[in-house]
Each structure stands twice: as C-alpha cells, then as structure tokens.
Figure 1 (tube, rainbow, N blue to C red):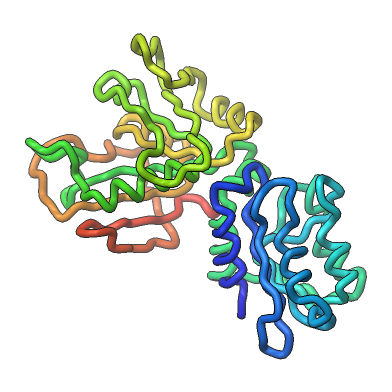
Figure 2 (figure 1 turned 90 degrees about the vertical axis):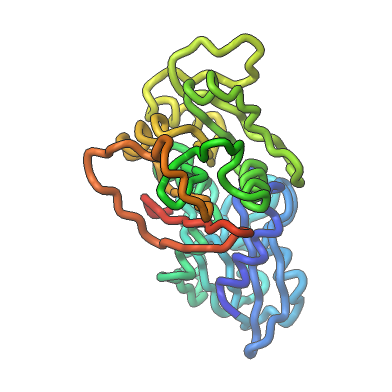
Length: 316
C-alpha cells in the first residue's frame, strides 16, 4: 500500500474540505492495511487521526502513509504530529511537504526529532500528491491561485464548428461542470461575456458550492450580468483573489484571454477536450505566442467520443 491509496482516500473529501486541503492516510502493519482515513470537513478530525483511530493498537510500530505533511498546528483540532507520536507509529511516508508554515510548522522535522523514520516521496507519487492540492499549494508558494485553462477544440484546433452549438459531446460537457463544482472561481474575458452571456455555474452535478464567477477585462459588464469584473493587471488580480481565499481558478475564455494569461506565465495546467471532427475554419484556440511553451505530465483520457488532453505548464 502506497501514497497512491492515501491520495485516493483524500479525493473522498473533494468539494467539502475548503479552505482546508484534501488529505488521506493509510496505516500499514506487516504488509496489511489496518487503518484508513481522510479529512471530510473543516473542523473535523484530520486524515491521520481517523486512520490511527481505525488502526487502534495495531498502529504501534506500523507505517503511516499520508498524502500531505502532518500538521503541528493547534487549531480546531489538535496537531496530527502529536497523535502520530502518541500512537507510536514507527515510520511515516509523506506525499508532499506543506508550504503553510502556520499549519505544518515542520511536521517532518518534529517527527524525525522524536525518532520516527520519515520519508518524503519523489516521482509519480509526489506529483499525484501535489496535484491533489495544487490550489492550496499555489496560494502558499506563489501567492496566487492555481490557474487551469480549459478549452473544447476540434482536431484541427478550432474553437467552433460551423452550424453546431457544441464542439464536444455530452460526457465532456458534464466533466466540465464537475470541474466547475470543484474550483473556487471561473473566469472568462469580456469578449466571451458580450458574445455569449455565460452563466459559469455548475449544473447537473453534485455541487457543494458554486464558484465565484469572474470576467477579466475592461467593463462595463452588460446590464443584468452576475459576473464580477476584474480590470486590473492580471498578476495583481490573481494575488488579490488568492488573499481572498480563491485557491483554484478555471479559465473558460477564448483565445484572447488564454494568450494574455500564457504570455504572463500565469497558466499552470492545460485541459483540452478534443472532439473527433475537423472544422476546417473558425478561430484557433490560441493565437501566436512569443515563445514555445512546453508541457510536462501529458496525459490522454477518453471521455465519451472525445479525448481529454491534460498537461502542466508549471509544477504543482
């Protein structure tokens, strides 16, 4: 049992733990899973505590896998480091360090100082742990939200299909609404606002909360628009949003907005829903950029008849 299981458990808290990060934990003794847990809601027990309680006496001398560095913070719940030490865990495997000094406070160091063997993983397990809480990590490392640019495109890179309302299929559109339900804010540019009057809400999916809905650019907003206008420099606006609790931002605008964010190096992850059609004409999803932009961690996933391509511009 590895960090991958801890990440899987952490996902069960998706949409319910804000502003806290998603965390999962697994207790393994003699090759057997003896306890599992995840953080389910703010103010509730953390993942490590739930896993340790499930393990009971079997936690003594066992290995604890946890997706995020255990906290040392005295908040609504006691520090997880104290619970780990009290359970006499022998080894702790951590998916990613917590960059928030007010919460982690050197949890790895405290455990090591107490004689616990601690490993911070690298490679694919680390990437999965970082991606799990990319928004939380970005706010504390970069001072701004994690920015995802999403677009639906044809095989020839067009953002419209003549005579059609939609480019991609129903399953892809549902996936987008699930993504809307997970992020803290969604944004488009003023061109999209004027052309489409988008609602930008999560519909037809289980949405514990609706995201903030933003428009970047010069106003005014059309009469009756419920979007929030952000007209300042992009980096300043992102820092203000981060300070206001926005950890993740989904861009759904057209090529002008995408190019502005990419040129400012403010896009972190790219999601392209590619439909099996050649449009032959229409706007490309990106205009010319001054320099090539390389992606890492590229993945391709079938979504109905479409393919979702995802990759990182910046490391989470």
